[in-house]
Picture 1 (cartoon, rainbow, N blue to C red):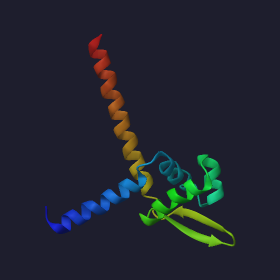
Picture 2 (cartoon, one colour):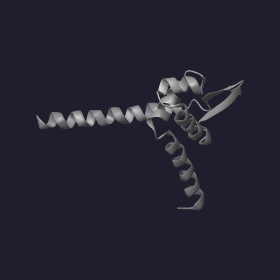
Picture 3 (tube, rainbow, N blue to C red):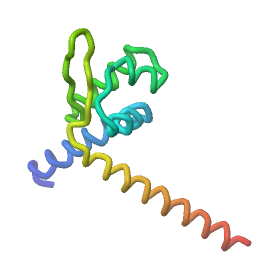
Picture 4 (cartoon, helix red, strand yellow):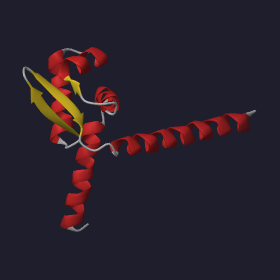
Amino acid sequence: MQPKTLDQFTARAGILKALAHPSRLYMVDQLNAGSKCVADLQELVGADISTVSKHLSVLHNAGIVTREKCGNQVFYSLRMACVMGFFNCVESVLSGQAQRTADLVEDLR
């Protein structure tokens, strides 16, 4: 693999790694509806504020979310809404897996 190609795939892996946690996926899903402050996300996720802040930092460092300070609060929003298209792709894969499993069970009968 050429160094430039390796760099491209390493960058892609970094974004996928940032998304590879259920709480972060949920936060991205919730941010699709609009920006939210850390406290709102903390309530939705049900984790302590430091854990939510750490997850948001991972998403921010990966370029998935942006943040804007407003008074004492920090609001997060999706940088690129196209990430939701990736979620649709994941759902298609899950649906395909479920169908293959159902077909295997049916073949056993």
